Image (cartoon, rainbow, N blue to C red; front, side, top):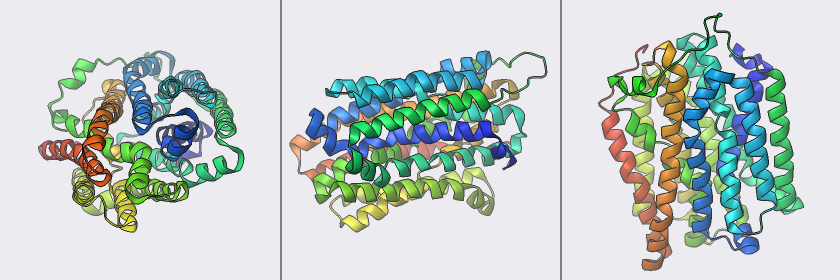
Length: 397
């Protein structure tokens, strides 16, 4: 973990922490935004989906920018203009559509946060260390999920949601400045920056049955943690904002713990592939339980959400598995393509979940409506999981 002693890596990890915060903080603002702006759960589903879709659409341009301008300028410029500007729009919002614009801008600004660090790891460190370094960034950065839960509720209760967003805006701009001052671009030895093409990545047969799981793996945990947990707990279990904050805190802490456990568990199980299979099997079981028993006692439900957070953080492991098949000249474009698929899957699933929930809420009681929502996230995950079983072991396993 010597790479984490550099101020530049710390700055990029802070940017990823903000990225995790922004994709999850709407969950605890549901009732506040409904009361003050008239924003319904469907409105917030669209806003949250905007974050994921703009984030995903930026991945190919980010891959180009990392090669053309380097991670320092790419990450600092986009974080300041996109995430900083978007947070300011959120703080000034008076209508639900302002939230859509805000979250779209924030998604653009957060797009290079994780990929900039991965780009540096891929070019400045041995391939065997990539998985551990990648998981460490995700693990530390997942603290954003914790900050976006009970601590955010406490801050909002103390000073109000608009002042809180202005503080977050200032913090975002400060991290952007820190990146600009501390990150060092990889040295390509005078041979120019590596060039890769997306079609070359898609020709790699080892990735063909891995990509579908990458598309659906993160969708359930991200959507439930960042969007549907609050409406579900409030609608089915009559939960207060404080209980919602505690429940999402449980899920956020579980995500952090899961990322830090990924390395030791992979070592114990003997391969990345077996660890990914086990993690997804547990996630599928927890989602199936919520689908079949959405009105289970609140304590059981919160425990299941924690299990989904703990076992559903397979992102870094799948990324390390995919990275093992990428030749050096395709690493930059490869990791951004994988990230685009992962985050794009979340955005598309969130957009699709909006009309599904609207229809289900009109046709069925709250518990049954949310049960159908959990089934909506479960079925694609099962399909991606089955296809992943055809993927070979990592090239350096």
